[in-house]
Image (cartoon, rainbow, N blue to C red; front, top):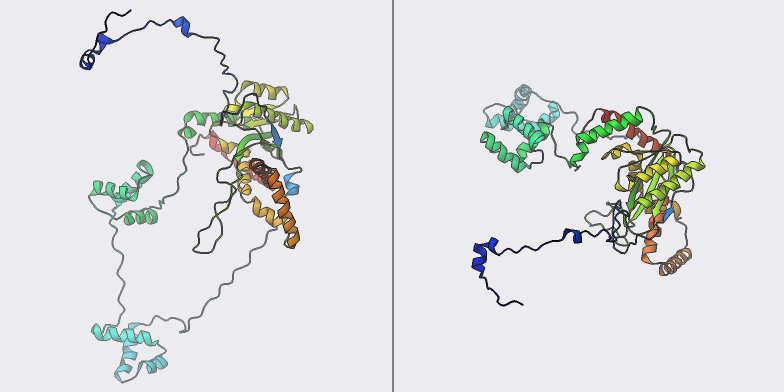
Length: 470
């Protein structure tokens, strides 16, 4: 039991804080609790984690949405129309061909006739000289003491930017401060040469004389041009491309994931001049769907959409790989030196993934980091997303007839209303995304795959030379 309590004032505590410090003994053995029941091995490779209601025990489900037949057979061929030669109509000058009359001719003939009392109309009919030309020369003859020659236009003034100033601007813009504004360039030029320039003067000088323009910049991480990244790209080309282990036109399957939302539309729309245009979507923020796709030089191998909530996990990727290898087995490609190529995302780097691929008779290749240009699947997703925003227009062009009656339209509307009542908003959005994806993927042609292969193979030499900004 405490006999007394010592009261310490705040001033004393601030003056000597070390005197009043209290240390408690700590038992290190009691802090170690090996049986804490925490398992860290389940979802360390999870990317894109979301709400807490996503249970680890929930089974992953992938639904295939790949087109039934080859994209080349389903895609309609668009005929190429030859361009018509443009006919330019030249408007004839009503006054006839322009003639540069000499001042001596006007002075010797026309002015003499004026002195004799001729009118401008009479001189025009006699000498075939326009009245306006005669009038201008006559005015110059009277006001300038008989000098009828036209006034020469003044030449452009010498540039305020000297040769040294031009070199200074080019050096600072391209090497040191390529993100500086024109006002900053004006201050820098004044600091260097004590000459005040207008921002327009600097802009015109850079554009017209130095051929330097300002453009929209694209951001990229510093590791994209890191020495380690360049070495990895060079090693990839030397190990797999030059040794002909990976032949993009023969034995490669490219795999990756991408997300799509039902509200994706084009950012441009036609409207009358002077009016603001709006695009109606079900919701501005809709739940996105993740698709996992595998393509090769012959087209789509398999495409699945992830139906469960949460980000894509390693088990989802492994399940899709099993589906892809099953498709390849049906074609008799097992143990035929086929390669499954994918990037270095965290869900792709588990050791058991490569072991499983090897057991099934295939090879796996991981792309270098920050090197999406070496994979065809990136171009595939770019084309699919472009068509995904236009799929409604394509459906209206190919799937709806202009001869439908009002009764048919009423029936369709009634059926749509009944179906909307039965299904929830989430299911409707999911079905819409799946339907649109299936339609747009069937529009990708075999020529697209050939061009994507050609585009990717261009970068092989650049990787060997360890170039920047690839």
